[in-house]
Length: 212
Image 1 (tube, rainbow, N blue to C red):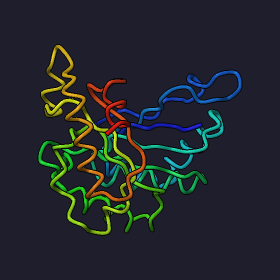
Image 2 (image 1 turned 30 degrees about the vertical axis):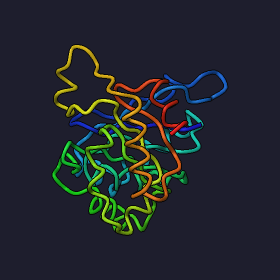
Image 3 (image 1 turned 60 degrees about the vertical axis):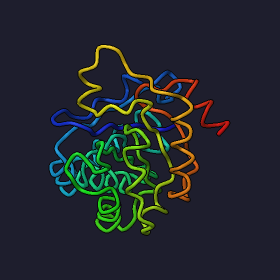
Image 4 (image 1 turned 135 degrees about the horizontal axis):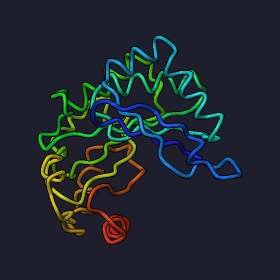
């Protein structure tokens, strides 16, 4: 059973996981955590986030934590340390804007390196979710960090996050182009073995990826 935490945005807190657990203790929903990055890291250092994670793990029976749509280093590092202290493997998934950088302006590579340095490599691996493949294809520079990225969950739409938020109809892009984007990313991110979809994607898109 995997526990998902989403971190993009400001404010918010962790919801009690028992609301999402069935009678067998199987986690069946999403626990959201959306706080300012430095606060999340500070809460981890103070032991507060550790206790939250341990409570969630106990109530939900989680065996793994995935932090998705993470927008800064503090969010990712804080979650990684809390998961490590709770004895669980953790996967960290950053999101990037149309320029291939995090919402903070930091590069994807430097963010991954910074989290690894701050946590002694606590994350099992990293992912990228919620940009279109074209948005960050050009940022892979062959650095060590590219080997730490093992999963992709991209948007079908080429729109920015702001444009998607304002859209009245979700743009589903082109499944064939989406799949070819994954092929191109696989050539510069050699460790990727996990493929999925995010905004605008559906069975057509992931089927196209499987056949690409």
